[in-house]
Figure (cartoon, rainbow, N blue to C red):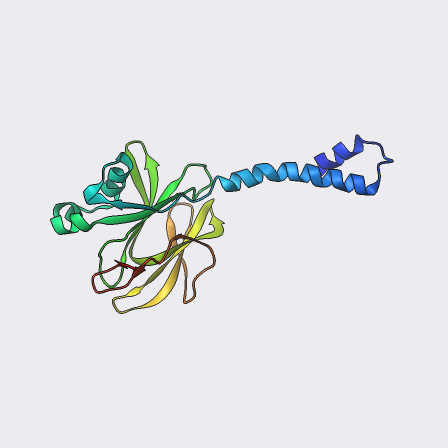
Length: 204
């Protein structure tokens, strides 16, 4: 970009005032910033989608439920009736195709619920990563590894000390990168809209 800017400036008279040349440089630099800004804009996270599987009607909701519900969840009527997902779409690996971060926001126990990273496939979703015993907030970090965004979630309860777990991609799968007592800086994907209870998450 610097070389091209210099080449364009050389096309203009050398008598051009320094302030005019600086202004031209700024304008050209802004033209290069626009595509980058648009690319960053393409990673905008979708609104939170709340899916109640018992009442799921749309194809997307049914596919999400099928990808995250266990055989027990589907066969036990009381569990199935209350089964709820909170999810958001975001491009995690920069390929301009959104993955899905989904957290089970219905009952699960004192240690929280399951968290999923899903990839859209024809006719449904494929699991990229699954974590048990997780709590919100789910946080998307600015850092990347092997093109995939890092993320973090809260963990604790059921005798486990409360902490934040940061996950990073190693080229094949997500692994625990570190554990901290303070919340990492990043964009909250699924907020802390629940309080802890013996039966799991309860909406505030």
